[in-house]
Image 1 (cartoon, rainbow, N blue to C red):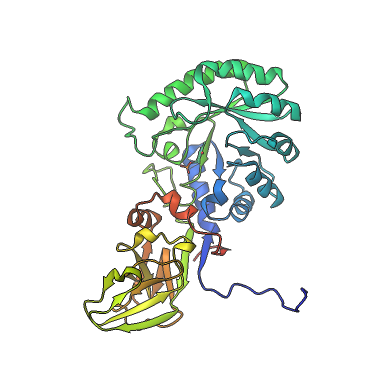
Image 2: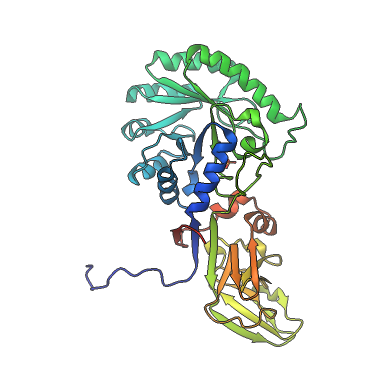
Length: 384
Ligand SMILES: *Cc1c(COP(=O)(O)O)cnc(C)c1O
């Protein structure tokens, strides 16, 4: 017990993110079945805001994941500390001083610059994946250098266990357009992997992110690196091999903290951006942009209360948002308000998708889930 005698207090505030671990496992199974290759679950950036230790340990326990990928050495260490045993690929640019830690924690570095090799080799023999730039224009060795870098890695005692590239446009390209950047990148990659595998015959070839996996079948190769789709967002292939509809893993909820009755003509919130045009009941919600409800939903957003969609009115502020619940008879203090995901109640069921919240805020689905702040506790469960 701590000095002062206080026992640990659970969260008092009702604002939380609920992660549906069954949905995650089902999505993973469906994606692995579609891809027909090993599934590498991308859990960088705290599993896109879902909480990396909770997500990775659950997926590992479900037995559907071949490996994990993160951006930072620290993110890999966090997973090892949580007990994750599967291979963990560290995809970000080399972190000076990171090689020793990666070897000690059995993390697999991605080599995206020939200059990375010496520090890695000095840390001792280990597996690496070689990243090649086939058109993303970001990380990766030039195509012309790839085989030579692989040969040099091998001569330094490193095991080139994989060769990878990253697709720039898989989410926007039309797979029916043969000259799109994605198909050109995949052509380049096929040529590069042939040369790299002449030096490192066992190297796994991987290129596909979520959209590549869903929409460009020949991108699936030996392994797919999937983030967005795992969490139930982004494109979902119409292929019949996908056995179940995807399920959004994140629910972002709060409760009605106050109900206020406004006369017609009364305004609401900073800037008085919204004025009641009729006698109105407003629900005050203890959630704001500091929690990751984007301020830019102002004027566009909605929440589900009592199973019915209610517009958010006035500016979203740091800690507070306001919903117009005039059309939800019987709404009461403490009622659940769903910012993301499904809400059910006496008036029905409705779902706010990540794509909707993203569109309202001018963001991508990635930014919506990554943007839920550390102030909001993540609660893990098996879903409804
Ligand atoms: C983030 C990332 C992915 C996963 O992308 P999604 O679109 O979320 O599936 C795959 N590969 C690399 C190199 C990445 O950085």
